[in-house]
Length: 285
Image (cartoon, rainbow, N blue to C red; front, side, top):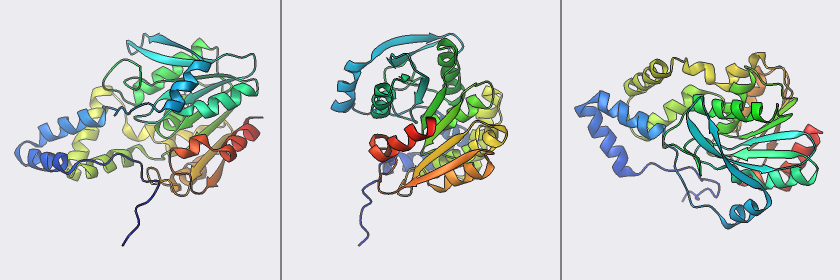
């Protein structure tokens, strides 16, 4: 009997929803695609753990309006006089998931900011996308007169790469559990709801036309090719949400990147590990 993996934390699509999509595609492929696009763009929200609520007491939190996307986002700041660090969470996550990293760096004298991305946590909106996540990073970077370091988890790491390739003056980047290919994210989602590759192509075309973008341009393995910023890619070999191979692929295409592989931490517990924290501190120092 196969043992259940202790790090299998990703959200599983209910069987009834897969059956619904399968039937919907038979009746109306267009409606199936639009319904899938809606769910794909809607982050899930989960109960906030007690540790995160307690960590809120140690920072300044406020709502910040971002004119370019016409939404307010929740920001959390540990004020200090040292170098400035921005922390970005992953899809369906929250800024306070990175509280351990924030508090650890604050104790070392760093000025640390994290936030709930659009449609996440306490921020406004129900739907979001990579374009909006990049806009949030850009707004906060300008508001703080440029962060010295960016630290991103999962989808948030992807957003950092896409922002930094355009206009960042960051000295260093750290990613944790970063994915390497935007098209794969689309493909994995379509497969998870039992829709066909025909629907996959239609949904990618839909997003590209709606936002006037090329999906592949957002893939980190492409984004980093002209990025000179020194980058540390931390990834657990037992990450079953995003394979550790993704970080090695990014490093292969990045002119100045190093991979550190951990074991036994999965996709989220890695955010609260002492050893990982020491790697981060050593790298940005």
